[in-house]
Length: 78
Image 1 (cartoon, rainbow, N blue to C red):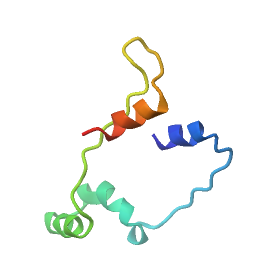
Image 2: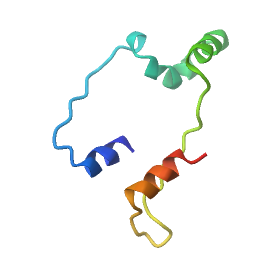
Image 3: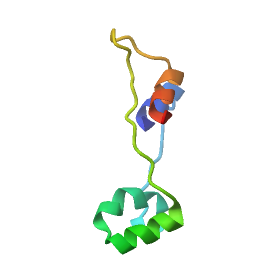
Image 4: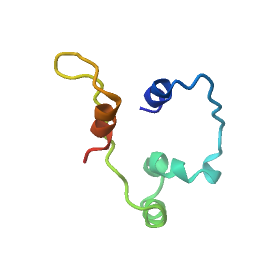
């Protein structure tokens, strides 16, 4: 979804840098499976609950590309 948004925005150049996990709270959800139950509970109490991931839908049943708005809605709908 990130790469789609970048391409759709027409961004020609993008700088992405490495941030160590200890300095990056965004890593917590991806590391829960490596934590003990106690560590996971502490992390979730600090950062909030886990959101269910919904892969975006890029095309309709006929194979036609959806609009950017429809693609975004498909990724964020609950």
